[in-house]
Length: 220
Image 1 (cartoon, rainbow, N blue to C red):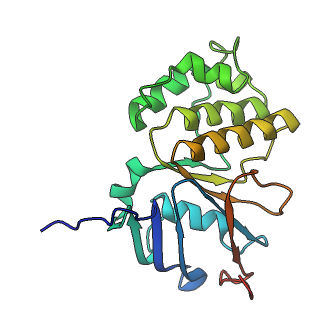
Image 2 (tube, rainbow, N blue to C red):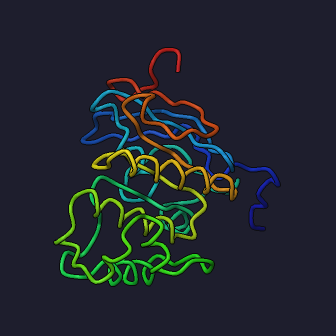
């Protein structure tokens, strides 16, 4: 019989999760969860494995050790794809496509929330008037905003945000905070990597610290 998830299961939970590259541990073993309506801040020095952790959870890296559960049910990388919206360091855009064409293409691949249109998402992130601009003509900050528009269009309940404030000015940082707050208010959750407490959304949060060798830092 198929597993029946508990009624109050977290959006994602990991048990003994670890990752090694060329037999060298990058992080883990880790045990944590993200509930609906909360954000988990992942902090650590460079090389501690923050980006790697998010890429493993998103199913972009193989070789994980341990178990990942989605809404209480064990789920491999393919099963997690529709549950997770990932914002990485690279924008993941096609340079010769316009802003609106990029979003249409990505929504075709990854799905779209029925309650919002592509042009509306562009306006929300401050790119109204740039609908027909090729992605290659946008600044780094504008490309980040375009990636944020894609995230806002995503139907996924769990967001993985890798340094989401990078390349953004103060209004852009405030935009990220508003988006995260609205997503959590709607029952979503988020994992956010950050170098410091100054770069954290003003929402219900818990902290996961990774040590320099990828293990949890003392006192985490």
